[in-house]
Length: 499
Image 1 (cartoon, rainbow, N blue to C red):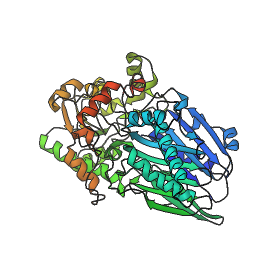
Image 2: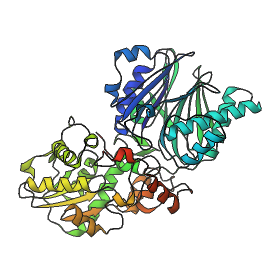
Image 3: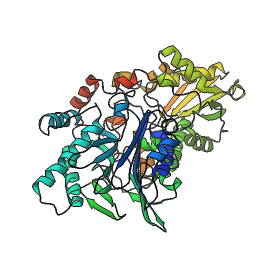
Image 4: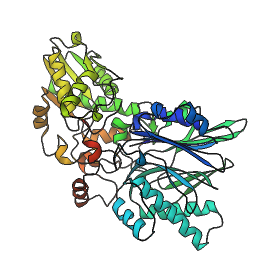
């Protein structure tokens, strides 16, 4: 999971809008950030570790010249989070100057890495699958140009994208800056990760933007045109013309976790409102909770993504809604703190209870998901210490029992609290008086209600429903043994941490 944005302006520098767009996408990654700009003849690049506002300063803004640019905020799923060399964008200078940013994960990275080193004879500097993807793409452009069958560079880029899509597997939403060509974006044949196109008409000409979520597009004053189709490539030429081609057949099968947790609630992804989906998830949970016939004094969200679900549950149950947990947004990310004791103390400082809302009351907490269970257990203990008589917990997501391979660092099954356990066993581990999980069927229905044309979602973390055929049980075992993401996770309290 990362945030990506690419802008093609008619004349002025793009860097300020790229910066603002990255701030709007900051929730998708906080490990590092990078911006590259292009003035038609020269690239300018800045990268650094940390949040967007900490990486770039006014001096950088003055250096990053040109009407074309890319921006990336990184959430580590491959490689290590503390290696600045793995911050995007990545660059190659052969056969053309190409900068590339990527959201997702390849599932045949090692196979492609071996091919790049031994057959393509290219050098790799990092462990990032993004660098692998870039080198595959660049090599296919080289091969197309070498054959001399394409009439121009534009045709060569589209043909190379087709060849790349036939070689790499997994999830990839990609934006590139290509010397002599322009701003070019493409999306994997199943559209697992989001990518949206926008435009703006100005007195200087038509301007274009690609972004992970449409909130960034709207905030910059662009009009949302549409989602990039699965298997499609879209080029914005240096003269501002848009050219779109279907590179390979595509069938939309997006990651359903975008709607549960990853995306901002004010986002539309694949024509589906994230906010409305979360309200529908709350409604389906409310039906379960009603059947339990519990005495509930108030419904309370775990900030922030549990809020829409809690609002709907409160309304459907006829129970008052209360904000009892206050989030300190300046405490910093808990996963960078060394040692479990320090992390636990940091979590307690990050969420502070309003004791009057807990004292002698039965509380229903609503969270987006339960992964390891550590955080849920600590929050429940926090509520009891604040005076709650009973603490019930409802999860907007079903039990997470499998790793994710498409761009979320959900860990090995041995670390997942629900893997191999019943709901009752999980309830006892986290210390709740009652525990409610979303069902996979209700989750899919809640998302599909926004776009009935989508017949299948990636639900693999919940039920093994991975949408690419190479993800088998043998593949998952291999991923777990490889320890992918372990360098990041050794510092984490939760596998998905959003500030």
